[in-house]
Length: 80
Image 1 (cartoon, rainbow, N blue to C red):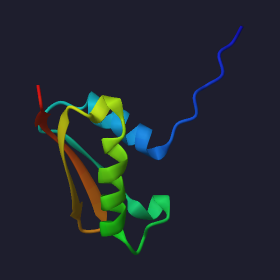
Image 2: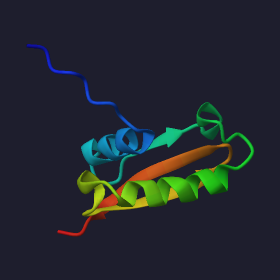
Image 3: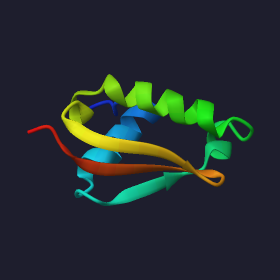
Image 4: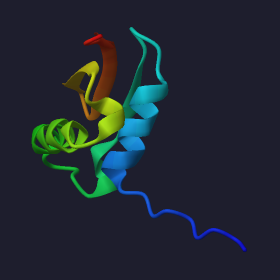
């Protein structure tokens, strides 16, 4: 019997991408792709709070910064 695929939220996708990164590496997000083309700072705030609720990101130290029109999520270290 085939398993039904788990629906993924955008916060879950970002959390899994961040968990796979090594310390010091980062990835960029275009807020316009998610409907926030005018409010990058508000979307960065939403990302910070959205990542806090995922178990795979709880012990990861991260930095969410706005760089021009992109948002950069960087893995800084871990709390372990």
